[in-house]
Amino acid sequence: MELQLALDLVNIPEAKKIVEEVQDHIDIVEIGTPVVKIEGLKAVKEIKEAFPHLQVLADTKTMDAAGYEVLKASEAGADIVTILGVAEDASIKGAVEEAKKQGKKILVDLIAVKDIKKRAKELDAFGVDYICVHTGYDLQAEGKNSFKDLETIKSVVKNAKTAIAGGIKLETLPEVLKSQPDLVIVGGGIANKDDKKGAAAAIKNLMKQETLA
Ligand SMILES: O=C(CO)[C@H](O)[C@H](O)COP(=O)(O)O
Image 1 (cartoon, rainbow, N blue to C red):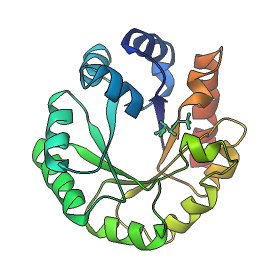
Image 2 (image 1 turned 135 degrees about the vertical axis):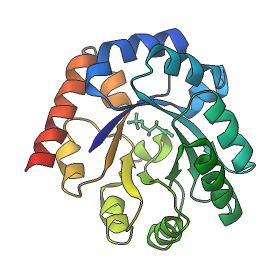
Image 3 (image 1 turned 180 degrees about the vertical axis):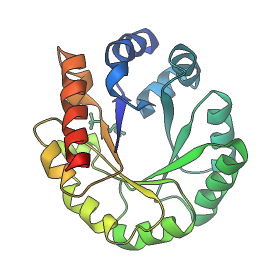
């Protein structure tokens, strides 16, 4: 089980400082969508250059021109690139094709997908690498989460790895771990803490315990 740190509300120097602090306890650094929009793929490039031992995910949340966006994110050093599950099938297939050419991976974000069971099954057949249930900030503010959705996709996804994102923190992690996702994505649950290293270590330790149990 992998831990991904999502960095959404920081600039490049702030991102580097946080990764420096928590690098021993995470597997993947996510350059979040707001960072990609504000700083560009330069953020991906700089983080990959500074921390080559970590995987870097570019959260482009691609919706169209998928092959091209995957190519550009890959050239910047991304190991994993995200596309939205609500995108056209042609876009998903284009993303997968380009990622394969570049030796990279695709994570599909199911945010705003209405029938996640049906879509997860379709996406799995397209050969994507990760399928991620996700409650974005705007629905987190309404008290929603993706715990049940994770269980739902686990029942149909046979090939891809499963992932979960959206407001996960140490206190809610046990609920998430019941469904045994392959990847847990945590943003504010680490990045907003005073002791970021301690938070990342505690989350990773709990994940390790669950994997061994
Ligand atoms: O993609 C995102 C928002 O669209 C975030 O990166 C994701 O939700 C994880 O961050 P947090 O744990 O703070 O919710």
